[in-house]
Image (cartoon, rainbow, N blue to C red; front, side, top):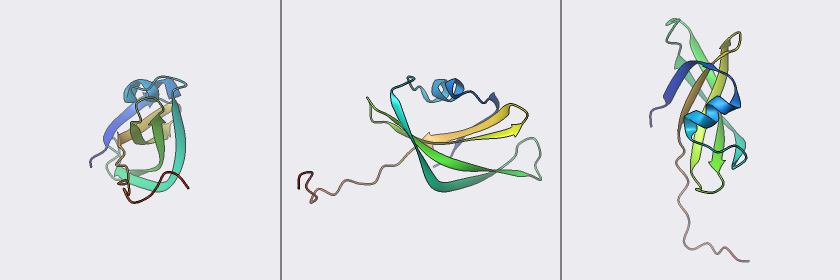
Length: 96
């Protein structure tokens, strides 16, 4: 799945919330070991590596993968995409 890229945004978490349609205080954030490297659109000979986190809306259950990097003094790049959740094993019981 392709990443949606937003280069040159402010680094405020409120910007990320607006972009992903999240309500402050209604989501949880979880780091992952995943990284993504994309070419820098301003400096084509350079690239940016993003550490990827998961953000889950606690009401709707929608999960996003996203990365936020500072590219220069107070200017950031944001990448995001809906997260593919692992399939649920119907043979597993939710109860011990």
